[in-house]
Length: 367
Image 1: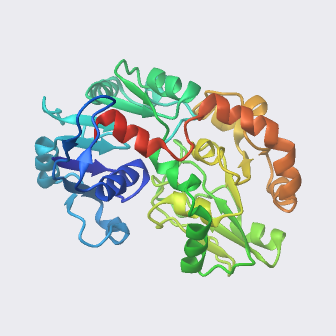
Image 2: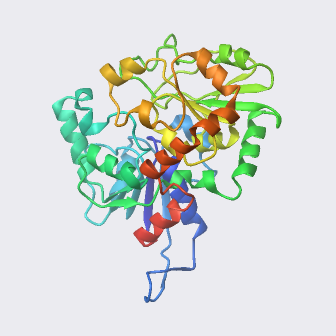
Image 3: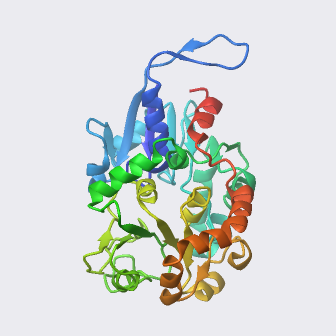
């Protein structure tokens, strides 16, 4: 059985990574085929990853890879029995009849996407994107209204697997706290330090490579506002081809870290703006704060939202950095004040992100 993985166009990350690790862990033995049916031997599996050369260091040693966009990638896709991706594959690739294409996507969107954001694309590009969506064998969803939202936004009429996002299982695993401590140690963060992770989304009207474009938050100033004992981690969106320009001994650019889930585990507070990451973090105990410094522009003119943040957000929506710093310095009160609404958010949008998503997905796929 040949399995090909593509995460963000060449990173070892996200739900494809979780599926890969689970399949490696189940090598050999038998595959249960369902109640009342005889177990059958597992097939030998050949795993191949799409690679962006800039992220080679994030792949485990010995991982078989093909370069993103290369003829070898096309050949691997054409020969695959199973493809697991969290983003669009080449728009002109046609799925062979015997290939199962599992689309895990990379999160539940707050901002409007695909068919609901048609102004992003010309008609030809939109048609190509829709044709790629129509080639999916199934779409993985977080359950609740989150799954329905994804299918509707993508104009997808095929099977939706309400299993949760495999990428988030690690956040609920028994060893999550220990893994978080290990990540902190690798980053040089002391056990007694408080860590705030800032991970904003990208903006359609910005030059992603322009070093003079502000990341929204003045991370150096925030570090000073929070004081000694605090570290600020900055992770810009993977579309953004620039580093944080803030230079401060307690600010760390973690944009090159392979997988953001590791960083959630290392953090004491999570700050985003309009990123789908809020849906991933909401089912955990990590405090969520939204730094919405350009809320009206993003919501009313740039992209638009699927939900009303004022009514449904899982954490406080803060318009200024001073408000953000004040809230971070009083995290227990923030967590207590938002506990009820956060629970309602999880029940509505991501009820299946509970640590068992990968197992449920593999069961549904018969793997």
